[in-house]
Image (cartoon, rainbow, N blue to C red; front, side, top):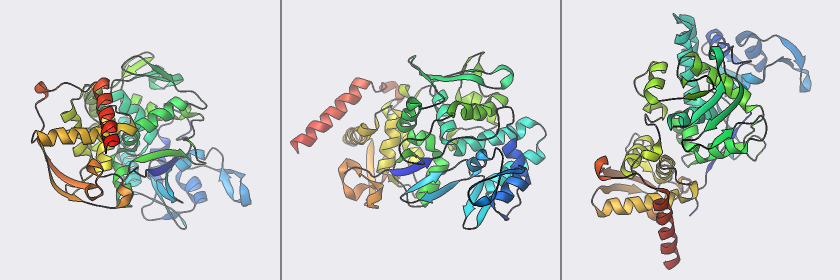
Length: 394
């Protein structure tokens, strides 16, 4: 059975006006009144302090340079899919928008900050909770990728690139950057993050996600490096990156310190240089931790996606790799399935393809890392080939 993905549209990324003005969203959040429902015009004039200078369809006033306002919105249902507009500062209602608790917290941080780094840390935290493309760049940085950009004075400028741990470089182009969308698709759960995952699960959308553009196809990458440099300016401002002058790296301890937190795990990031170095048991343990619900149950399709993501397994092979790992662990009495439940069809494939095992509760005892070696690409290929042969025999 093929798992039906949760389709999520991403609009073009704008954010604030320029990399040197990272205060625009926090300043706007500080003006938002708790409980008040704003029209789009009121939001632009009273909260974002944008004077109306243009008109758009229907003659309603519209401020100049207001494209970034949409990236302050959160999630909405859009036909058969969802749309994540931005970083969830405002929730959309039938007759306007209202500040979220996250917006009010950011606004309070801006008003009460002793230094500009205090509110900038809160803004960085919000970006990591809610902005998928920023999450992807930072998450890859924690996995050993290097960021290429000139950042004199802490303000990113010029060309933007990502270089993998094995040396392949992706130049993030101003138009049609298919390589970035490929990374987004291959690391969909990393880009989504635990905050949006929890919200989607509460809405009944528990399957792995598939990113789309607002008009279909892949998400727009038009002017993407321009927007990403605005987000990255926040992380340069709080001192998250090491290196320079044009090549930068991240490590988990340094990022946590820059954010003023002790643990990156609640943000869905791992404090490791590269998940390619993880053993199967380490990756499985982390995937279980990331995917377990409050009742201890795991949705198997989510678990397969996260486990495969941590091991750099292609998306189409992740279910087979999970099944192979589970069979071996069960044979050696390292894994026991304590309970299983059919869940809902939308949850996708169950363990070993069994529809009665879409949700499981397990007990897992990992081997010590000293007794294991990281999985190689050849081993992954062998698992998939074996699974395919078993399918042919059945």
